[in-house]
Image 1: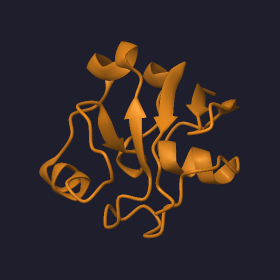
Image 2 (image 1 turned 90 degrees about the vertical axis):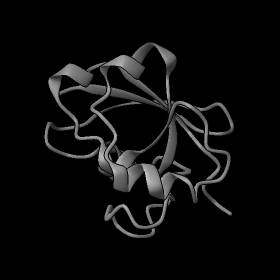
Image 3 (image 1 turned 120 degrees about the vertical axis):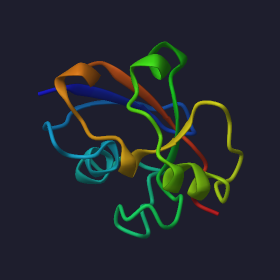
Length: 106
């Protein structure tokens, strides 16, 4: 199972295993990672799973679709490495991914 490291806004590092086929958001929810609120349950309708992908992983990410790009406009402090974790499917290629959780409790 791929390992993903979630770094919460307070700097806490959580390395967890997430099964292939789950979203990065589901991996966070299933492992009680603080900061991933996921109010819409992964429907790409709220931006409360907003996170920043570690720079070393940006080129390995699947392409962002127009719906995610549009929803990120509603995210607090969008950056060039912002993604909605509900839109990133876990696969073996993402083993070692580092995700910096954004401030989603607003």
